[in-house]
Every structure is written in C-alpha cells, then in structure tokens.
Length: 294
Length: 293
Image (cartoon, rainbow over all chains, first blue to last red; front, side, top):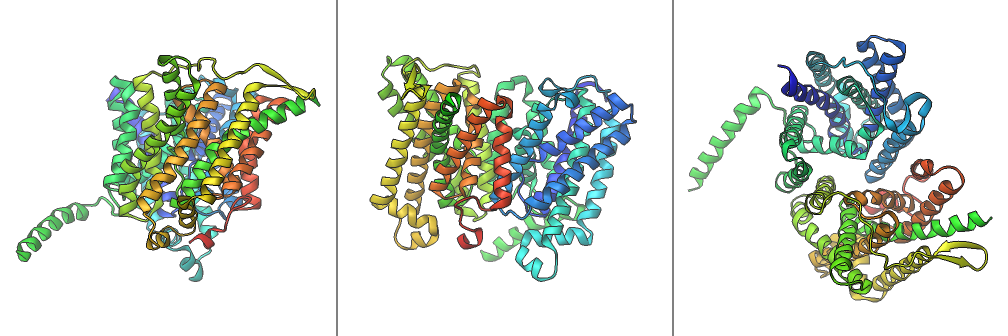
C-alpha cells in the first residue's frame, strides 16, 4: 500500500504514539495537560538536526529525540507537578507554548519560524508501524506493572495513595517523563514523515488535539485511546475534500461525544476478546432482566 | 522616558481589555470550577456582530455595540444550554466540560470560517484612533484611552452588580458552594445562565476593542489564552486577581515590545505565568484548592 492510503496509515501510527503518551499521563495518572505538543517539537527538531547536520542514523535520531523530550519533561515536571487541577493544565499550556516560542526565536539552530526543510523522509509506513507496535507493547507492560498500578492510585485518590506510602509527586514526574518520551518519538517520526517541520505545527491546537483524542477514546483505556485516534484522524482526513467543514465536524464530534458519552468511547475498559464477548453477553442479560421484570 | 510612559499607557489599555475577558473567565470558573475554553468564541461573535451591524445598518457604533454585547451574551447562554448543562447534570467531573468547551471553541471558530470566510476584516473607523497628547508627557492614541475608560466602566458596573443586586449576592454565594446555594433556594440553572450572559457580554466588549486593535478574523479568540493566563496569575475564581493579573500582563507585554523586541512578548507572558505558579501555586489572590473543595 503506497500513496495516499499509506500516508494516512503512517500519520495514524504517528498520532497513536503521541496519544499513547498523553493517555498514560492524563488517563492513567489523572493529570490534565495542554502542552504535550512542546515535547513533540523537541523530538522533531532533535531528530531533524541530528540527521541533517550530523548524519546520524535515523533510528538513533528518533530515540535521541524521545530521550531529550523525556529529560525536558522530567526537569519541567519537578517544579510544576506540585500544582493541581486546572493550574497545572494552564501551566503546561504556558510551558508548551514557551518551548515553541524558544524554537521559533532560536534562529541559529532551528532556522526560526520559517521552518526546517530538507529532512530525509525516513518515516515510511513499516518504520512507523514498527515503532507503534514496539511502543504499544511497552506501554501495556508499563500500565500492567507495579508502576502502572501506582499511577492509577495517584489518579483515583492521591491523598489515599500518599497515605499508603506512595510518593505521588515522584510517580507523577515519572509518568510525565515517560509520556514526554512517547511524544518526542512521535514528533521525530513526524519530522521524517513530513520532511519539513515548522514551529506552528506544534502549537496549542496540537496539544488540545492530543488531549481531546485521549478523552474521546476513554480515559484510562489504552485501546480506547488508539481507537479514538483512529476515528478522529479518519474524520479529519476523510473530510479533507470539503476541507472548510473538516474542523467544524471535528469540533461537533468532540462536543457530541462529551454530551452523549462523557466517559469516552471505551470508558476504562480495554478492547480485548473477552470485552467484545462481554458486550454481547451484557445485552442478553439486560434482555432477560427486562423479561423477568415483566 | 517618553516611550516608557507611552508603553505603560498602551500596556494598561491592553491589560484592561484582557481584564474584561479574564473576569468573565474567572466568573465562570468560580461558579462551575471549570475553565471555559469557548470563551474566546464569544469575543469573536461579538466582534462579527459589531462589524456586520456597522456595515449594514449605517455607522451607529452605539447600536452596533449593544447588539454585539447582547449577541455575545446570548450565545454564551446557548452554548451553556447545549453543551455544558447536559454534562453538568450527568456527572460532577469538570474535565468533560473542559473538553466540550474546547470542541465548542473549535465549532464557533469554524462556523465563521465556513460562513464569512477566514479573511482579515477591519472595523469601519468609528472608534477614534488619532494621537492624543497625554499631559505633555507622552503621545498615545485616543483608542487606548477610550478602551481603558470603557473597561474601567464595565468592571465597575460588574462590581456594582455583584455587590448591590440580589442575583449578584446569589453569584457570590454560588462561588463558595454551588450546591448549598441551590439548597438555599437559588435557581441554579438561571444563576448559571446569568453568569454566562455576563461573561459573554464582557467578552463582547473585549471583542470589539480587540478587533479594532488587531483586525477581525475567526481565530481572534486565541487571544483569550492570554486572558486565561492572566486569570491564573491572579488566582482562578478571584475577580480582583483577574484584573491585577491582566494589568501585569498587559504592561509586561507592551514594555517588552517597546524595549526588547515584539517577538519576545509571548515568551515573557508565559514566563511570568510559570514563575508565578512556581512561587505561588494558586496565583496571587487564589484560595487554596483544598479550601474550595
């Protein structure tokens, strides 16, 4: 599969990786963020500069982009994750925009607002899908490890979690660092896919898009987040022929899902074979229950 | 020195327009405890109504601005009815309203893109922008002084409304505890509609002044990000905080633009935000979150 369809699948894989990162932080650790596009920008620019100016192999450059984004996330997280609720959300918005503005004004390294051209198109469909597979498996390992349980404990009740001896601040920073790594890798892949990056690509709209995808798919469900990404990416792509209505439809979908099914499409359940079986069983059960009531 | 005073006045005038928007945002936050990201949409709606009334109905700025204010206020009520009330009645989790408000802001922005197009429009020259000599100290524009005065008038009006009227009392009660206010016999749904109307109206005023300053286009609502930042610096839910935060931001922005470079003004804004939050995590006038819950 090449051409248009292949491009959409590649883009989908890239978006999924970023969404996985945000899902860990917002869905599993329960901290709402509006600045993750900043970490994508760090990853994208690191990979671009390493491959173009230093001739580093692209796999190494992608991983380096992820790691740099992770380091930044860790350093940013230590002072800011003391904030709670909307305050952290707005602070992260400020941080994300600050990263973008620094990139935009650092002409000597990032070539400023005009963008960074001439990146080798290393993100082919197999590369993107390969990274997605590895990182999805990695994410499932994290979520079902003791760390994952600690993250969920912080989300559900951080007072209780800290009384039980969890260092909640530490786990939040850790969760942010891991999600920063995922966003960095996703940004690096995006740089290789587009061959051209520009600071505007990583502005606040991108950050809010990432969060909306995660909430749309279901907070606390990794498969829901992948499903949400697929649906929202396809909505924006399939409506491209009537491009001026594309964002309108996107906004309406977002509002409608929040009004009709605020917990997202998957809620907190994962899409597994037993879940699909359970869907049908539940239907039967309610049917029989209704009959019994009659 | 001249430039300093000039930029100071410009900054205060810009800050006072931010204050109009930030106060509306803070008002909604204090009652519903969520950040209404569609707030910028009301500003754009106000701006466009003013533009089209001026274009079609002669050049009477009073009629146009009253239409714009009412239009912005009513659209705020409509948005609350359609998008937030169903969520509010179902779940206490404010995150879902936050996402819905993001969706709503995308919807409003793109309704304008689809219907009137994304091009930049300048308001007809009904608001004077000629230079004014400011007590021989500096030259500034009449527009800056006018927007400063208007903002002060509207903020004073809001303060009177909150202190002197029965609904103002109800809003102040609701900002302590919405549920208890409801139990005390306040019609909560009507109260929230009023809060949204007032917030939308103030955003409409801000919209008219911002569309004179930066011309009018569907993405103008993005400027509310800075008003959000101002509200957070002042402390979410605190009205004096929102005003002080806005003035700090406006002055800082204009001084940066005047003395360093206008490319750094946004960086300075977000820098101030982050430093404030690190030093005082709930903003300058914020109540601690534990106290609110």
